[in-house]
Image 1 (tube, rainbow, N blue to C red):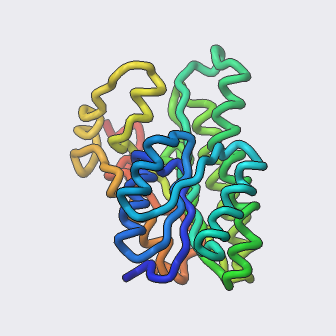
Image 2: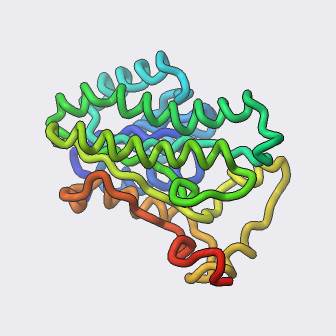
Length: 249
């Protein structure tokens, strides 16, 4: 199996892209620590998969230390980290409140930074590993009404490259994944009402909205030794959204 013997910690894994990654990882032989703030859903998924669950607010330095320590105590040193947790906030630049901006940055950007920083000692002790940072197509180009989210996802893209340069000597690879329109609850929750995102699919080269499994398959590749010579890279999972530009339509 592609992840046999690996120990993985996945953030935001109670549902959506994170849950899909957890399923793929367990199926491929990894010992998986599911982390989230959605405790009931996280515990239920862990019980279903035979994984473990740990509460983790990724914006908290103390909770990161506790989650990593618990994972090491439960499974041994960590060889895969998937920084997947994230939130979305829609508002015009001129109307974006500082508190909302900082909340998005705290979870998406600071959470990724804390995860990478906290995991390094364990991953070095293991002799190396793979860090997969989930950015977005908004980490490659801007979108109106997403100033905080876009800023955070560009930051993840940059931090990934710095970490890849620093950690390569320790056998630690660091890559970013850039999903496009994926069928998860995030957009509906950010807008406070159910949203049908299927019309977006008609604009894409593949003519469909992505599924969490589409992202999970790329995350699996980067977590596995199949990507042993990949680090500091950007892996797009967007149905062709970034293959064109605004004038094409």
